[in-house]
Amino acid sequence: MPSNKNQSLLPQAEADSQSGLAKQLLGLSFTIFTVMGLLVWFAPTTSANPVFAKRFKVSCSFCHVAFPKLNSFGNMFAGNGYKFPGMEVKTLFEDLGDANLFLENPLGLGIRVDSFLRFRNDTNVKFDVEIPTAAKLFFQGYLTQDTVFYGYFLFNEGGEVVGMEDAFLYFNNLIDNENLDIQVGQFQVMDPVRAREQRLTFQDLRLYTTRFSRDNFDLTYQRGIQISYGKGPIQLFGGVVNGNGIGTKDTDGNFDFDTFKDPFGRITLSPVSWGSLGGFLYYGDHRPRTFSSGPANTGKIHNYFYRVGPDFQIQPSPQWALSGQLLFGRDSNPNFSTTSPQAVHHYGSWVEVDYHYSPTVTMVLLHNLLRSKDDPMKDVHTMTGNFTYYWRTNFKSIVEATYDIQQTSATHREKTHGGVIGLVFGF
Image (cartoon, helix red, strand yellow):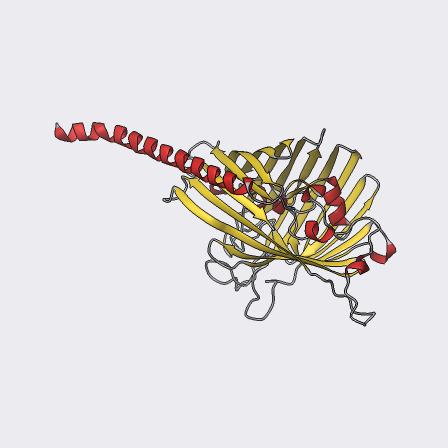
């Protein structure tokens, strides 16, 4: 009898514990936002863009609808080699008595810091203080009128030095053709569709970051070359990349694991000013000698794969924006099996709605979906809601929650909801 009585008290005790934790988190959140409000209230107003706003003496709202998301002028500015139309970059160079030496003064530098209080139920740690979770040092410089280098160094994320991510030379108006540009270096292959660095949510685009093969290929950072050409309502992108990310060199001193270079491309049609349709294709042929886990690929087994699908962007007004993408994929031998190769078919999508209520308030809904009948452990189905308040143009706080829509099953035993309270600033 005493045993049964104690068991009957367990659910109530657990409920009381959860209620107490919720009250503590609510109180902590209120305190943090109150302190941030007082700090920002008495802080001087500054520009948000850590490099270009300081250099050109403009507010970052000149190029951002809500940082880090670019507006139409910001996209044009980046596509024009990070300069204004008609601008002569030689005015930024210091005269050192050598007509063939171009050095800027001062050099374009900036810093962005992301900090979060994170709530999650997919690990044993339910509440985590991640302050800071990431810090980035941005740098950019002009080499000639139409040649620019842009990059940043991610020097703190999860307590480790990550290194260079974006780092590329951008050749604008190639061969005196204002519509032809080339990008060489490290970049994200999906930037022509949607730049992950410009997303407003803490939650990522799972369609790009999920890996289906043992060589850990994903649709994020790669080393390679990209060419873009635009004429009228049509924009074309094409390029080749190593395909194995931006990790360190192997024991032979090579960045790539094999000789084949993965081609990719995108075509965009913008028949109206408020919308566009696009199509993306990526093809890969990988036969790495080593993997992140398991034995070496001594038999030089291949995995042939593709990612293909449409995307769209609609912006009926400056306040509203709707965008999304659907990709289908197939990996012929993602486990690099020598005896019984098993192909994996999959598809996924993301759809996002942005509402910029005012210069200080932005709201976002993001839907992530991944499905694979051959690898159901990778399935994802979530909805994320984000509320962002801009205390200053370069200083924002976010409240975000992600709800796991996917049904529980043998491969998805429990819901993995999560949320963050965050503070992001740049200077």
